[in-house]
Amino acid sequence: MVKAYDVYRNGGTLTRRYPGAQDQALEVGPKDYRVVYYIPQDAINAYPGKLTQNPTSN
Image (cartoon, rainbow, N blue to C red; front, side, top):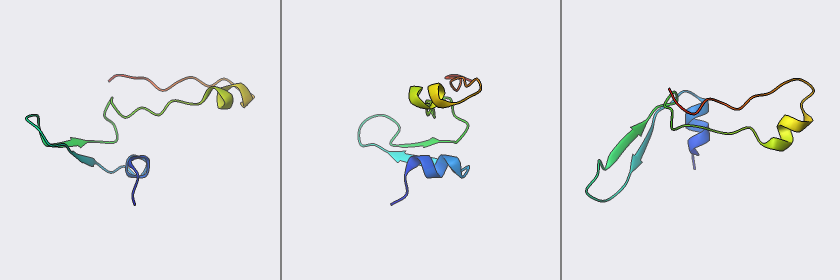
């Protein structure tokens, strides 16, 4: 099973399929502002240099 993280990490576009009245096939690209993976606080604390969170909007 392919996970969303792997699709985005490899530069692919993920197609989400949701039933209902909205757009039923939503494509989310790897550079989309909705693709956010926060750096865990433990990793920030353990890193010897300075780390900052990823931006959350375009």
